[in-house]
Image (cartoon, rainbow, N blue to C red; front, side, top):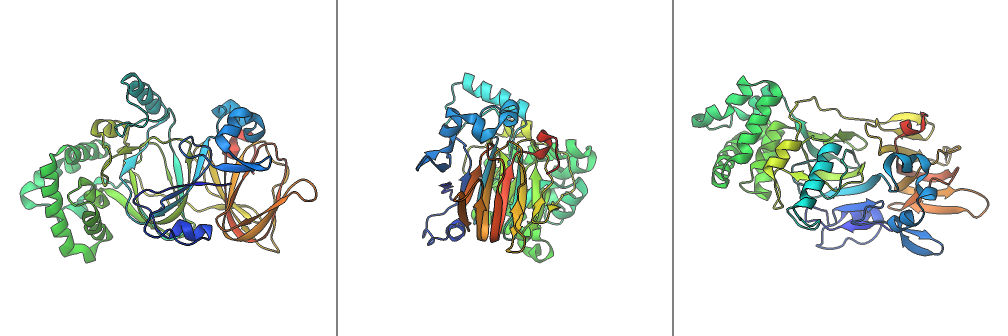
Length: 403
């Protein structure tokens, strides 16, 4: 596969280049490597002795690539998007809609005549966007609301004494309602009041930054986005640093932001994002409040479970995708066995392996940074060599089997 790179400003100037084994791009950031058939940046695949766009191949003849079950469930489109993220600077605070909200929002914005390319557009398709992120390096993120008591433990020591009434909803309301009221208060302050409040809190956080990573990140975020109300997010969202191989699942409505590190991400094939801070891009407060789930939940860090000698699978909570990791060693190859008819994308992140299928001469080498799509019609393949790979596919529960 040839995969598109997104040059967003928050990206790294080295991480994706190093993964792909080429010189660093200099001062130009590279943020995301996209593997899939999203119309915004579809991959190219080598087919019939030439490079062709995957989305066009699927449109022409979806069945051999996707398989009947996937088409019946998701239509004639690859239902997942596979990425490498290289986060040098913090991403925006954001949440993604559920299916019903996405469908309604997409239709509404179409009726209003808002072009898909308009920066004010919230809904670019009718899909929800659950996602799973797996750390390749230490990876720091904000994910989901803390409970009110934990938020107050962080805010009380730095909150201006003359504005303590601002925190009343965290004391007096039921958990989700109180969080929603407090978040709404922050987001609807005037820009001048936001800058004043953020300035006061960051000044206090600097004095206490040795006592909490949340205060340290407030100071760092203020440097990147001075006066942005999202600077306060490390106090009301869970702050976590994943070690390599650890993962988070982000369901619809979960407010989150990625702050630093390199990771694998797989998601439903959607580009719907509602932003809530740490960004110069469009922020629609009313729509964000309509999407966000304010229920405080404990942070759940996921690790993969072995399902075979060379393969482990991360817990999956969405039909559109699941993620597996494969450690291939000379003494420990991988044989897919008879496959269900479903597409997979395999990415090598370490070492080199050979993929073999069919008869003699049907093989290809995969080195670090290289990927291949396995079409539904391929009934079996084998991986041999010495390397580590990630494999994205449709959730196995759709096919009535465990592996």
